[in-house]
Amino acid sequence: MDRMDELIMRYPALAVCREDIRAAYALLVKCFSNGGGLYVCGNGGSAADALHIVGELAKSFVLRRELDEDFRKRVDDAELLGNLQGALPAHALAENVALATAFANDVNAEYVFAQQVYAYARAGDCVLGISTSGNSKNVLHALAAAKGRKAITIGLTGGSGGGMKAVCDRCVCVPETETHKIQELHLPVYHSLCLMLEERFFGAGNK
Image 1 (spheres, rainbow, N blue to C red):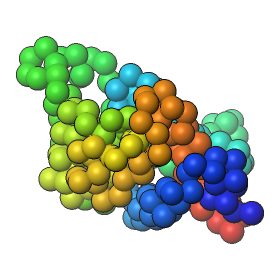
Image 2 (cartoon, helix red, strand yellow):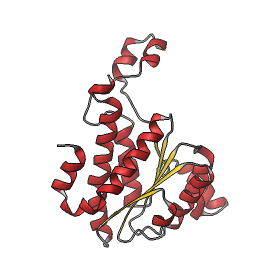
Image 3 (cartoon, one colour):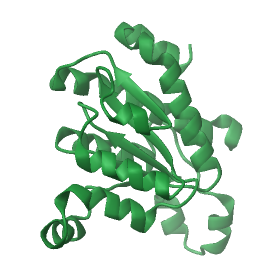
Image 4 (cartoon, helix red, strand yellow):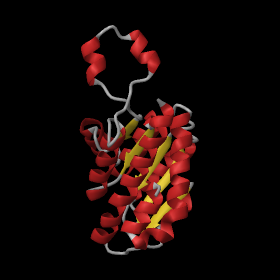
């Protein structure tokens, strides 16, 4: 049973999202395979989800992750090599409190995420916006900035997708309308994506 089948078995309501989840996964594989990085943004509980996603991607999740061979050859420190783990480059845009508060104070809080996307993202990178309504203005601005940078855009939301659905290359809209229920389904979706990505880049076939 693959990860997608397992997800649907455990959360049957997500069957309607199968195609979008697989497509989001394919876009993330493309991003990481080409040396790109992932930038994740959201507010409140969605900001916590963004941090959670980064935590699963930037270190081992369920598999042992080997370091890349070029890195190992350049580092002559057995202890360092023994403690580091393979990682996928992922960043949560809610992490930089100093930059975010400075920009909110000096310019406009609605564009805090967009400013960071403009600063960091490049063509081939991916911006993942999380919003239970699909209408969070600062997330939508970040996705618009991503388009300007020729980055891939993915949305994770609920209901009909709100404004996010129209601006994302792919949008996963879980079939709930209440905030807490949407969030309850977001976690298994992104856990499955993280598991699939780990298997793709650090599984047995890649050692």
